[in-house]
Image 1: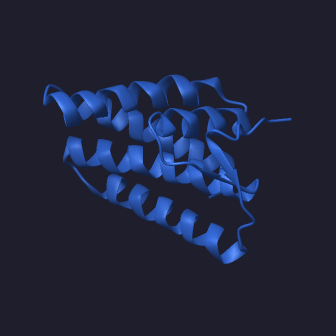
Image 2 (image 1 turned 30 degrees about the vertical axis):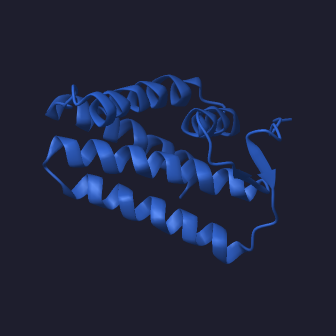
Length: 131
């Protein structure tokens, strides 16, 4: 059984329509990533799609992530646990760190090869969930 720690997650009953909206938003971002040939766009929208997928699957379990420091890490950890795939937390955290360097330090630009490898990984996660 997966433990949703109360300091990071709030117990909420979501309607199916709300969860469907989360999934639709995740698929929308994935589609943008797939349709771009700009590595930074592929990376950013791919990462966002992964997080949104995590939010949707967490919502299916009746929880909402609390918006506080470290919440992206917690989303990735729970997504990894829910899908029983340790690579999600490893590669997802690598993406999170690279995003943070770019966002806060202005020192990272993803290359074409890396962005497409990340995208293929994210697509494989979506396939696991049938999202």
